[in-house]
Image 1: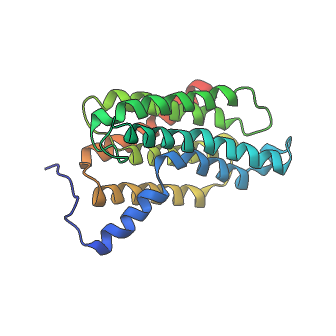
Image 2 (image 1 turned 45 degrees about the vertical axis):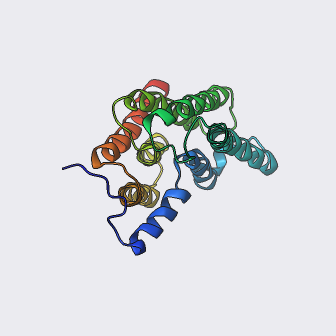
Length: 216
């Protein structure tokens, strides 16, 4: 039977689960993926200086994390939502649309960059598709955004390894374990059901795979 788990677990479990939920918020996933590529595939950024690379990282964080989060804050202050946590499906509609815009813009920009990994093209397309499909699914259930991001992030790293033929065994293992940890954390501290969690992680992974086939 599907049921939410909020308040059913002791504080010793809920507190670290809350920390995990904040640290691995879905808005941070694009930034984490970019940093991963900087560390694992530095030669793909050979055409730009370290300062330019850091500015590009900053710009990515600004567009994919700060602006969407600031939009949610404004919606809350303007009384369009009851809280910044977007607990209802209705409250999520405008943030979904805003985030879609920024993800599409990142994909559009990535098409013209020749001094960064080509795989960022499919990754940005994948997260754009995830928010688009997530908006549709949101009409029927409150799909977990954390699970959507976790599934997409883990699938992206697996696809990076496939594209480059790179020995990413350890990163893949860590990514899959983190995805499981994130999903477990949401079950512990959110009002999501297991169905909403599973739908999120599978949708995120499937759309990264679809974007890879379409773009690469």
